[in-house]
Image (cartoon, rainbow, N blue to C red):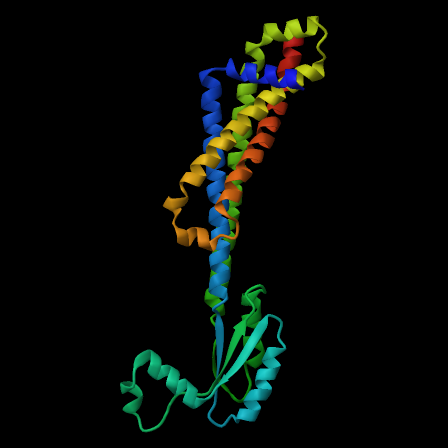
Length: 286
């Protein structure tokens, strides 16, 4: 294995500028893969943070008694995904309004026009959109309910936007991974062709076909690792540019994503070499 590693590194070195440019192309592609991964992760984190603040307000008619409101709150609390149901009476609603908008508007009125309500909060780990829709369906048509501020429309829009962004990022990530493997594949062909005489000598001294393939697979793996290391370094250096807010929203640390690009580069390097080696080696042998 040590000899195969040495021969693989030697073959990669002899590709010269082509090998260096290929490694840079692999590094650039892997860097974009890492950025897409961080963006999707941060988007998921921001979505969860937004959904953690989602509330559904069920406004009650004036004739609806506190006891009836408690019964309705108990019914809502049994819905999957609901974490808390709070009864807000007319006085509490007035205090909240004064805190947000001042005293002038309500002081100009002879009576408090604000209705009592049930404030429903959700568990962010659940499907908040489905839970909010279930709450609306459960209380809609109730004789004591004046109106419902559900917000399910913008929640559905948020979910759809997140799904589209995630799908696009995954598609582009797959395309970039294929581009990495293709770049390594082309360089592996050049490695084999440049070492054609060396391969013939290896066969003459008793080297097996498996040894020859392992040598060039190692060369492709080294190329992928070099690209992964370059991508990881640039990604770590760009941490300050992306901003603390972006990194705070992500669930995976920046260093974990960056270092994950190295084994990804290794795998893509081996796959890229494997796709081209058999055909090229058979052509040389014939």
